[in-house]
Amino acid sequence: MTQASTRNEGRDRFEDSEALRALLTRLHDAGQDAWRNDPEAAALMRHAADKYAALARKHGLDPWEAASAAFEAMRGAATRRADDPWAVVTRAVQVTCIGEERGNGLLCSVHQARRPRYSVFHDAERFSDRENPLTDYHPAFHVDPFADDAHDDSGEDEDLLLERTMNVVSAVEDTIAFLSRVGWAPETARAGVEYITGRLAESVSRRSAFEVLRRDRQARALLDLPGTSWTTLLRVVLGNPDPALAHTNAGRGMLVRLLIGEPLRVLWRDDDLVLTAGLAAPANGSEEP
Image 1: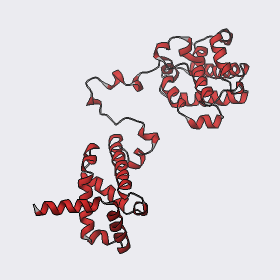
Image 2 (image 1 turned 90 degrees about the vertical axis):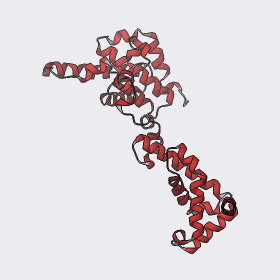
Image 3 (image 1 turned 180 degrees about the horizontal axis):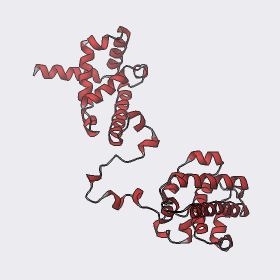
Image 4 (image 1 turned 135 degrees about the horizontal axis):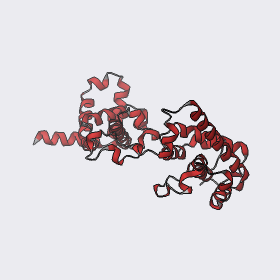
């Protein structure tokens, strides 16, 4: 009973923010060896392991990993100067636990897992983790037939390959000319279409290229395009990625329509295409969403 009372008194002492501040200040002033040799420091770390054990287990970690994060936070000057030192420590432990969990799931470092460009991905999965084969449901394995044709050059003779290359170049030039005629500045139209086709050549399908480009803020900054104009340009050039529209003119996009043999004059008769592309031209006052 006496030992339990002593432990409770220790917990109550450590939970007091001012007492924690005083202890952290004393340990800081005592030098680097104080954390290693001071008995109160050891008791504080045991208390931190107990305090954050539930949070650590929630993220699949050992309580002492949370205590380690608390130790790093406690050594900082910001913690000693904070209005509530425990609030600073708790937030630091929470962020570290989340980062460790995401890093373990993504098979990358905690530093990378904390960055938005990596944290948006789902955890790594083995092929055997699901009953159905990965190729049955994952969009990365859904090959666009047009992209397939554009990338599969095996067995073709040089004349056919040259003809295909010329067709692609012609389709790109016709797309640029079309956009220029409906109100896009020629230099903007050329830069935008060439950037899109360059990324398309590196992608497995038009749909995946669309999704990558849609989130490409660097491209928008380089081209100085509002969000609405950029998204509409992608739909016009690559087609709407909605699977329900895959076999429609809206789903194919200008590049595919030109590559499968539709002449530019036919596209001029597509009122929806002309209106959509024209209204999205930056000169028409599109605004950032």
